[in-house]
Amino acid sequence: MQSRDLPGTADAVIVGGGTVGAWCAYFLRQAGLSRVVLLEKGMLGQGASSRAAGVVRLQGGTPEAVRLGRWSREFYLRQHAELGCDSGFVTQGYLLPCFTEAEVAAAGSRMAMQISLGVPVRWLDSPEVDEANPALAPGQTMGGTFCADDGYITAARNVTAYTVALLRSGVQVAEHVAFLGLQVSGGRVAGVTTSDGGIATGLVVLTGGPKLAAVGRLAGIRIPAGGARHQVAVTEQHPDLHPSRVPMVFDLSAGLYWRPEEGGLLFGMSNPDEPPGEDRSVDLDYLALMRERLARLVPVTAGLGLRRLWAATIDFTPDHLPIIGPALGPAGQLDGVTVACAGGAGMMWGPAVSRAAADVALTGATDVVDVSVLGLGRFDEAGHSSLAADPVALPFPQALLTQQAPPSPPAVSFLQEQPVPQAPGVQRTRALPNAQAGRQAEPPCTGTGQLGEDPSAMTTTSLDPPFLVTASSVELEDWGALPEATGEPMHTSGTTIWKDGGQEAGVWECTPGRSHWTLESNEFVYVLYGRMTVTTDGSDSTEIGPGDTAVFPKGWTGTWHIHETMRKLYVLF
Ligand SMILES: Cc1cc2nc3c(=O)[nH]c(=O)nc-3n(C[C@H](O)[C@H](O)[C@H](O)COP(=O)(O)OP(=O)(O)OC[C@H]3O[C@@H](n4cnc5c(N)ncnc54)[C@H](O)[C@@H]3O)c2cc1C
Image 1: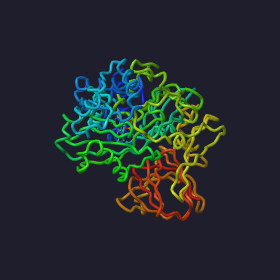
Image 2 (image 1 turned 135 degrees about the vertical axis):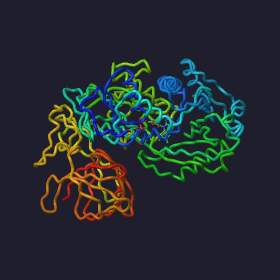
Image 3 (image 1 turned 90 degrees about the horizontal axis):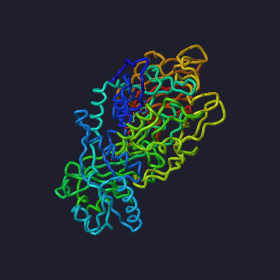
Image 4 (image 1 turned 180 degrees about the horizontal axis):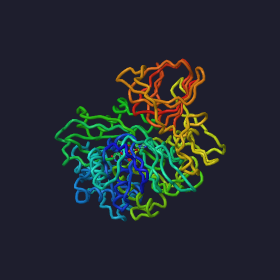
């Protein structure tokens, strides 16, 4: 799927090869656009989309959620006829049990709303719940809502399905190509800058799942979205867990859900007390709490081993609702750019969000859902939403607003910095959008388009002081194997922009792997693309990626674990 031959122009460029970006690219082709390019900085599906639990629910907490769930379910059901392949939707039935009077009351009004929209949801009283769930400890619930049409897809199969759809429909998929910024002229997008060069286009859709805020920063747009660790496990098989005996269940009060999988139970949950972040290690302590809660409700699971266990980063928005709408830059609406995010429900809502985003990108309107309330305009400067949160959602971290959303663009005309959580000994900063003088939060020497400037002015590269304009795509010299590599061989390339004695500035690129460093001078870095985990010896780790800067003081010792080929600007001083 890798494409090194990016076209110079395209009818549309979609950023992100997850379920939202990929289906959106497919729908844009279906709508008649000829040259649709999908940019994925890694490989299709490498984000949240290949790691999801696959739950698809009509029982949404808001009318918009219901409509998005229904549209997506119908899409999954017609996929085979349309594409010759599918995402593996299984109709299983979903129970949302209630444990308190307050939950019963909330479920009642939710159910009324859902029924008014045609959802075949019904109330099961406590004995009916037990009857429908022989594996459930009896007498635990006060009843619950049940929708027989709800079900699940298989995340990996969905990635396969959209890969087939992209290829068949003729979308040009560019894997290992990172979006680095927008080229804007007169308040309208004129193109994108990528790690493989620029593409002129008048239509861009930005996705990114848990990394959408970072994609937004590259585009000079503030997007209040985040990522949080989410753990999923699958138990061993047990006859009591046969799919005929186990509906899907969402224990909403605890944030724990489960469904049948491979003769056992798949169950998943996020820790709401954990701050947002991209830690994908398994939290065994929290897993034990998840298992405890599960075993209280499904006792047979207590004695079962696990067949699979993973932790991944799930996307979320402050109100747990999707984002579908035009990009809002510092100077107002950025014409030609649409933002799409499934708000942590990309299996449940993804196709509908993608289709709505494609419609909005093409015509400004859609009949999938009322998007007038789902755009970026609902968030205030601090990222607070004017909408009530979807009450049927995982309890994602509430800390998003203070930890992830950058503050409003500052009224100064140069790069600003905001401290973010850091590993001891490493000063890490995050770049902010900057409205004044039309400048984006990229250093002046990157090739990323700058808002409000003529894109034709962005293609110059000069190795003469003081500027290197296209640092993101400048040709690099081979700098050979990295001596600091501690595992597999790592390869470096770079170019020196400026050198004066022990002081130096340049561009450095390195392939993935682990390396250990003892720095002989202070080093400032700005990451253009790629991602690495920085671990100070004997201390904590932090991950840095596109748009992040870090200062490593002289004498710093620690590990850089590069996950995706990284290109950075560096200054040694
Ligand atoms: C463990 C887990 C369980 C889940 N379970 C469910 C569930 O049961 N039901 C449900 O509805 N949802 C579930 N989700 C959520 C769902 O997976 C996501 O909402 C959905 O996958 C998001 O899709 P996306 O395309 O927006 O993001 P992603 O799949 O993350 O794709 C974004 C892509 O953008 C790429 N990208 C980022 N930056 C750039 C750049 N600069 N240039 C180019 N490409 C870039 C990334 O590499 C990535 O591939 C779960 C998620 C997780 C992690």
